[in-house]
Image 1 (cartoon, rainbow, N blue to C red):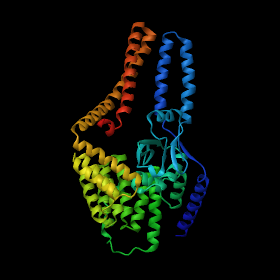
Image 2 (spheres, rainbow, N blue to C red):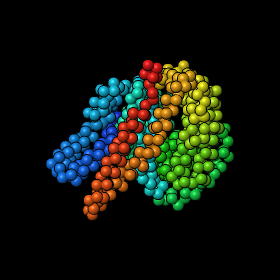
Image 3 (spheres, rainbow, N blue to C red):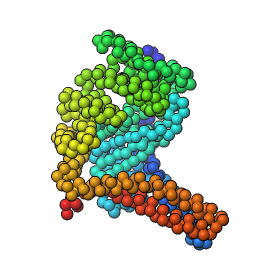
Image 4 (tube, rainbow, N blue to C red):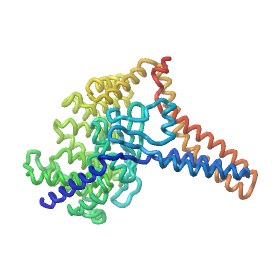
Length: 473
């Protein structure tokens, strides 16, 4: 216990020092450069065509201007948080916001939703390197950024702590509470004598067997204060390891914590999420069944904890078990009638089942119960949108057409891009061997590239809903 206390003191000093360093300065993070890569690709294509037409000076000028300008614009395009507002510094985004009339800055109080996705960037044994992508939405403005360094951790640490839990999804809450620097987390795991990934790989079968000890120990069994304290520390460490992608070490740490305090419903819930992540990584049906079983046990042990039950319901929904999610959300509402997360979850389930009247009812309840102005504005907007869909057949037909076009564009965009790459290969061989083949290749390349650019622009235009007011006019 003395060792645990020393580690906690060191953590507190590190966190306090880090907070002092960033509290009085801006936190910024680079915007995902995908759109700039597209611009470079298109300009390079045009440059190559000018070279083919023997307009060397024009090609050289276009090449130099684009390769000097586009990287500079991408480098200056960043998302900044100054403690009160979040905004984007790029020249082109600010110019576009001037034309479309959308605000350039978003106050903390105006944030309606923060959602985070975890993408597996690289798998190595029992470890997986995650890349997190976070989107922030409010008042029709959207900011998106991805992990990749200390700037992402600072943004998460500062911004996520200033918004309501109802604004954050499950993954964002976990990042806020448990995302730490990887080296520090591994050092803490070493101090806690958690075996390395290489050692744990030999005992992976232990995690596929049912842990009957979680059920055999009665809920009224006494758990000492020392055990609870140590289990809480191991729970924190396990979640930090999970956020870093060290899933095997996280599972072992969760297992040790559960041996000390098996009746902790929050501990069971987070253990189930870690098991589910590792089951998906290994594509193991046994681990998946065990993860679902532990999640059910966490639901049972949660009793009247409305916050935990809502988080469990959201997890069921995320895993595709809508029926169980609905039951859990209704159970939460019977305990806390104004639970925002559960009402929103029921609205999403009703939407997927095509029950528009139920969707309208849930969003109306959301608007009535929530005290957060941004969430009330969002709920009112959703209520108005689905009410209009339910009452106006012409508006519903227009929205269905828009959605069908959007899905069609998403399917065709990848195919057209692959076709463009094939035509460039034809151009390459035509330039080397046959002028006629090169001419045919350039013609096909221009058609496919023009079509692809048109699809990309159309997707951006169709991604927003039909404005209700303008539609009435």
